Image 1 (cartoon, rainbow, N blue to C red):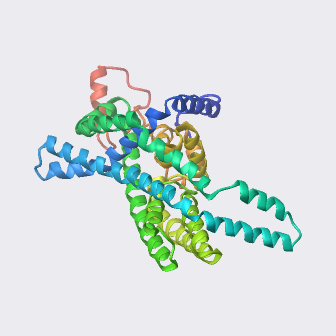
Image 2 (cartoon, rainbow, N blue to C red):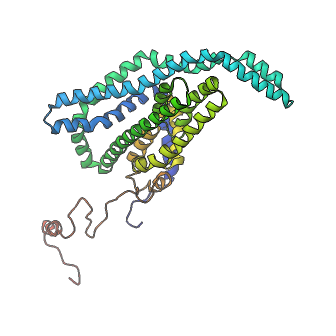
Image 3 (cartoon, one colour):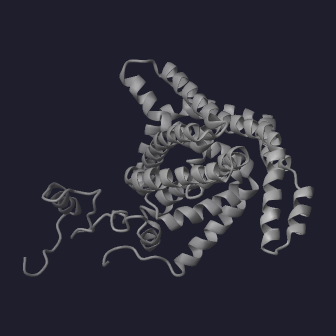
Length: 387
């Protein structure tokens, strides 16, 4: 569009190179960046609580302390739920060794009737124990419970951020004086990530309750454990429900047979399609603001860069980059059109040049005081021909 600043040459290559450099740096510091960014998003999510307390005459220091306790509660719910679910899974799987052996024998019998490699299946059964399935879960459980230094880092960062949020309005106002687009991007990120966490939490809880009810009806053991796991994996885009489905489906197969496993799979798929695919995006669409393809790619990218925590933070991290680097940048508007869920709605609003050099930050339309004042300050000058 005429009058808009143009992108520098090879802008796309420069942007891609910048993202690669950022990705390498983040991967080398993932143990610090991941937890700090998680805390940052939680502080942003809880910030309306502090503002509400201040409006109701609660002292600023007490409001910050209550916000701090709310953040700790969220961390306990998120991390504690994962640890508890993994602990129950690790403790339960070895009990189904005999059932797993029977399933392998059944498969061997079917393969023998059709003339396929029954011996190979039996050899696989003899070398594989169901308790080995708990190995990855036990490793992850040990990593979560053994990271004392990481836990101390999170606790300390939460304290500082919870009390520093009192000065954020003033900081944003200072940034707006020289970089209004950066200020708008930060506020846009805060609004979107807050809505994303709240809506995702609400729908994750709804899905988890429905999953627990269905699992109790089917008769799957540890129904509450799998409901908690479904609640946590709901934060992982695209493949979260699959991760939450595998353990209960496996336990249903070992405990109740193929029919129970199929019933669990059908329930999870139906709930995912109805609640998480059809209903939830209607509430999170304007909060997320990125296409489904970009959401899936961001899951892969952030999981690679930040590890397991990156899968949980994939959408918030992508929202941060989009809000601060793309949404309010005219040269990057073509990038926004490619990654945004609503390309036209997310186009950056740029100041429009007015005759005489004014923009949105200058005199308003119809206000002649600024322009006439400028003429008076310039002093006498020859009028253009024709005036």
